[in-house]
Image (cartoon, rainbow over all chains, first blue to last red; front, side, top):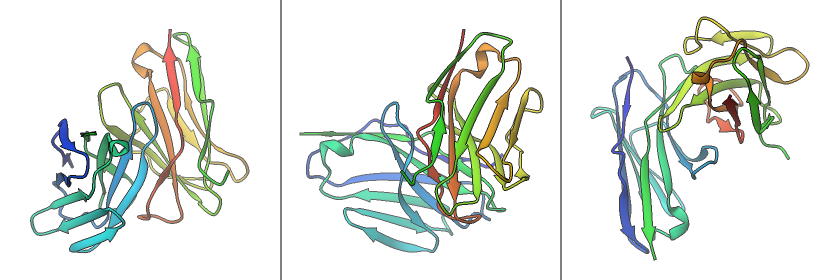
Length: 111
Length: 113
């Protein structure tokens, strides 16, 4: 059974701090990795995709991938109360036909 | 609106009835995926379709559930003889190609009385 593991949280950070979210996956054949944000009662919103080892930056977000360790992370700089949401790590299966999601980490940013 | 369109947003059915959920992909996308999110659980893959073809249905329950994506019109997820355990949020996503980022619709919240 292919799995994606995340700490459920809640992760609480003060406004302006860096939030660090982590994810591990079991399928070594996975090649595509994604972070989604989901507000309560809403649909997942894609915020980052990463395909190769290293860092990828987009605004306040940085995704990090280490395929050898089967580890993906998301850093959110200058966290804002509006970043308070559940963050879902998703990994493509080897065939590229399905996303396998973690259960999500709940982030709470206090002002 | 060029996003993934799902309807209805909310659907109430009695046990034993049929539920039909519809999804129109983003413009330019021909790959459609259905996911289910049960209360307090993660998103689970159900089925992946391209126009007129089911590519991967490994996450779909063997009975009562079916999906199609006809040449014309939206993708349909059909649940026959619904039971209380079918109550969930059903999300459709689309992508430009296999293994490309998937973009989600607003979902259909299905409630079974």
